[in-house]
Image (cartoon, rainbow, N blue to C red; front, side, top):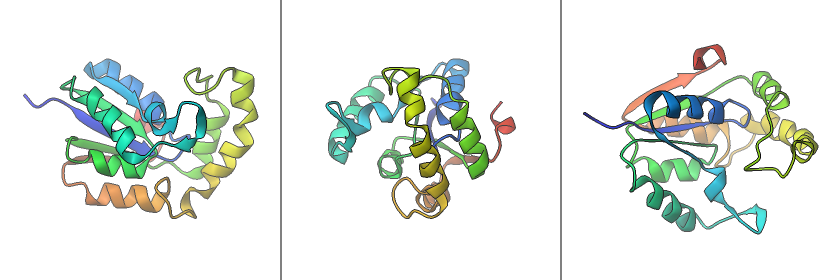
Length: 164
């Protein structure tokens, strides 16, 4: 029996965390949010070197046979292709991602309080809006290229309803 090793990616607000938590619980997978390994601890806006993030990820996935890893980091997703046997691209429309972000529960692993999270909301809504215009590792162009180039099992989800 092949163990599930799933990469979930998409725009901010697309539901990656919610989807991955649900998948983790239903299929007994370890769940890793890439936000927890992508940034410097003492400077949360500074990315760690790719090699440092990958070393942390590998130490986690080498301990477990079944996992789901989620995030918007195209560079890390590409580095994880050789370990994954499935990718899921949450490709929801911009307006739906923004609505999801507005209704997001407090994420204590990212923010010290709900008020701090809400203070960041205008920036997040602008970030979500720029998804189709950017040409970086966090962009639609990058995520679509990742999805298209993955040769294993893959799925593209375009609405919250499909995630249930």
